[in-house]
Structure formats: C-alpha cells, structure tokens
Length: 241
Ligand SMILES: O=C(CO)[C@H](O)[C@H](O)COP(=O)(O)O
Image (cartoon, rainbow, N blue to C red; front, side, top):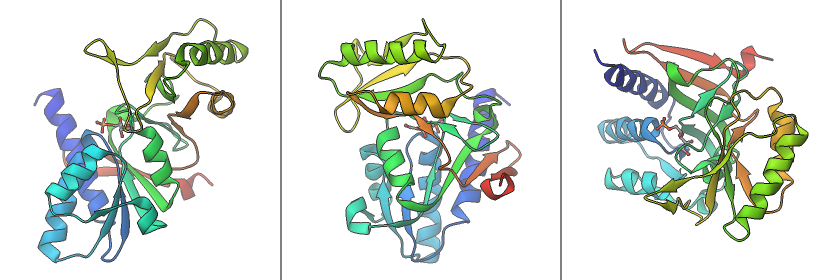
C-alpha cells in the first residue's frame, strides 16, 4: 500500500465517522480541503440514501460548488443563522485540540463558520496530529493594500515573542500572490515550534492589515483521526476539562 493510498483510506474513515454524527434537520457547516471534500461526498451519499433534510453553509466557493453539484442544499451563513455542527479538516491538531488551519487559504471563512456552530468536529489522518503546533507554516490572511508593511509588523511581533528571523513568506501560485475567497493575500509564517500560541494569536490579531490567522484555539470540540484500516480514534474536548 502506498503512503498516499493509506492517507486516502484514513481520510475516508474519518469522513464516514463524521457523517454518522449528522442528524436529520441539522444546519451544517461544510469545511474546505481534501478531507472535507471526502466528507461532502460521503454526506451526499447518506442524504440521498436516507432522504435527509439538511441545510448547509460552506466555508469556500470550492466546497459550495462541490456540495451543490451533489444535490446538497447550500445557503448563505446569514440566512441559516446559527449552525448545529461544522465538520472540517485541519493542517495540525495538538493534544489540546488546538489547530492550525488555512493550508487551503480558507481559514477566515472556516473560522467564521466554526464559531457560528454549536460544535466543530475536525476530521484528519494521523499525519496531522502533532505534539506542538508549528511545523506547518502558520497561514495569516492579510489585506493586499500595504501588505509589505503588514509583513514588517508581523516580523516585529515575532521578534518580541523570541521568534526573530523566522521567514514570513507571501503565498504564490504561478508567480502570482494566491488570492483568498475574500480577495486577500496569505503570508505563511515558518515557525517550526510554537510554545505560546495564544500570545502569538493575540499579537497577530492586533496588527492593522491582518484579517485572520490560522490558529483555531479552543474552537474544536472533537477530532476524529482516521486510520487506513477504517477505524478511528477520537480526541474529545470534554476529556481535557
Ligand atoms: O484549513 C484548511 C483549508 O483552509 C484545510 O482544512 C486544511 O488545509 C486541511 O486540508 P486537507 O484535508 O486537504 O489536508
């Protein structure tokens, strides 16, 4: 078995377990990324098999397009109000259920949707589970206007937290800055290990030009970690309290 097929099987296992949490009549937040994509596929299968009635809000245009193409009902978050449950992927999950997200440049909408939900459930393969956040570069969405000044402020904030000299990299594709669904840029912070995520999150949020960072601290209620054999391991917030 190749590594990628074992990761695919793990994502499928996590997605199936998350689909089992969905109840008829729910208002559901749909995440973004390859794991969330598998979830939407499996969700659509169940919705059609059981004639379920769901109303969904999406965290990205890509997921909305996928969900609608599979016959799911996708509405504006503001038309749905509060959501029962959001299911999304993550780039890193630590033992306290804190996350780094934004590898797909969607963390702004993902955070708005997750925090407008009673519960956020993360689905992931084992490769996303870390002891300490930071190996994955921390995405920070910034306004294009004056982004280089914003980057200087981010570098200064990092230095004040003992993280001087860590690269702050404009995310590009085909030589052009990646644009988010909100038409902003992404700066990726190469930090390696983050020991005080809360202080860094607060410092980033205080900078003009920063729209949102990719830390999800105390937001996720449950992480479902899939395994290639189809089983899952669950990490629950209530077990931490
Ligand atoms: O935060 C995200 C997008 O902004 C994704 O959830 C995260 O990047 C995980 O994606 P994948 O399931 O493809 O590994």
